[in-house]
Amino acid sequence: MVKELIHAVVVLPARGVRETWTLVARTRAAGWNSGRAYARTTLTNYYIRIRNRLVRRPRAACPCCGWSGYGFLMIDCGYFVVPEAECPHCGCHERHRMLHLYLYREQPGFFSARGRVLHVAPEHQVRELLLRNPDLFCLSTDYPRQPPNGFPGTMILTDLQRLAIADNTFDFVFCLHVLEHVADDRQGITEMWRILKPGGVAYLMVPFMLGWEKTVEFGKPDPMMFDHVRGYSPNDFHDRLKPFRYEEIFPENFLTPDEVQQYRIPRDSQVIYRCEKQPEEGSSGKRSDPSR
Ligand SMILES: [Zn+2]
Image (cartoon, rainbow, N blue to C red; front, side, top):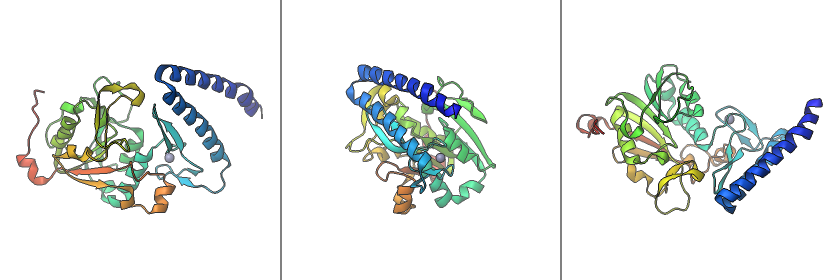
């Protein structure tokens, strides 16, 4: 009782003051659209948290952690918002839920496979999924300026555009929501192709700007868009995957309409690119210049 009272009298008003101040600062710095995105996210998530506490018949479920409830939290993306995106229990987003379901349902052999995995710019949600197979050796890699983030296992700091890794080393690569931060994303894709063994598979996902006809280069990192250097269009992203034989996997390929709704995986924005390095390319394929 005392705890609830302190929460109501001290914590909530203090949080309200802090969030109001943030709203004013955001609106001043980045304009009304940005302030509106912050206000909408804050208020919606208050509402969803309350509904999640009171819910009796769950309408949303997270396959990653088993949570179920009223709904996922909204994400503030700077100038716009993504509703029903983040699990309030494990923090997974739509892409993590989709990858989790896809691997378990469509690639069950992955969890008993032996081999080496390169996890680019590791996220704990994907890391926990990979660690479910104890026979995989997982190496994480991130940009040199990025401080080591405390992930278990080996981590090397190296630029995706010129990986300090020998050719034909890995069986799998996981690279989710990374390429939109990379200045030369085509070179990054070529590097992933190079370090994969023939027959190896890269799982790629990128955020899409819905409604954009073509991919747009921003020219520099946009701080209001998580420092993305471009906005990808779903119409032309696949043009960049040339070194690979790739397959586009949409949620409806392996989920029922009810499951798409329950797991809140938007059909129009979530695509897994399963990219395979064809065996015959291993001997004759191009090799990136190691001096770069
Ligand atoms: Zn979860």
